[in-house]
Length: 211
Image (cartoon, rainbow, N blue to C red; front, side):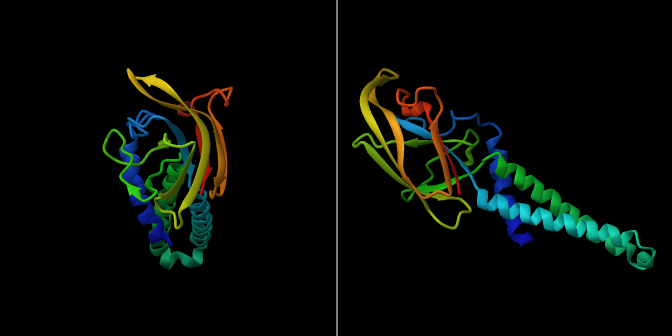
């Protein structure tokens, strides 16, 4: 299990390193996506598993400390200290992964089968928030998300009203009255982001989900 966590952490560490220069939605990409809505994701399943790792490692370190306090274990003190160091390093690793996961830094592997949709300033794809393009040819959009490190895909369907607008001297579409009509996430909140949701354009709105 620790090997799995280490593998997970290695990928997340790379994503985290690439993310530091990203704030917060100018790099949600793609830049020319109009209209869009903002999506943030928490991998709650991984977080629960990581907390289980943390609890187990903390208990194991406590057991080792108890053994070190016992004079009868003097002949194996070096071995116990080495084991404590290994467990301590693993706990530090797990705590770092938990922090990264809590920050909702994540990668979307694909949407509706399309990959390489997102990029941060340093060329990575790990972000805290994503601009999800809206289909301007109809008043509903449906998405199938494959989240990195998730075992299953997650479906989301939204409804909205379209109207013409001008952005950067170009005629395009804006979406209002955005609402979620169907989803397969463990939890979903939103849309939110401004006071009068019905009057906000979708670009101002955010949907928060947990997997």
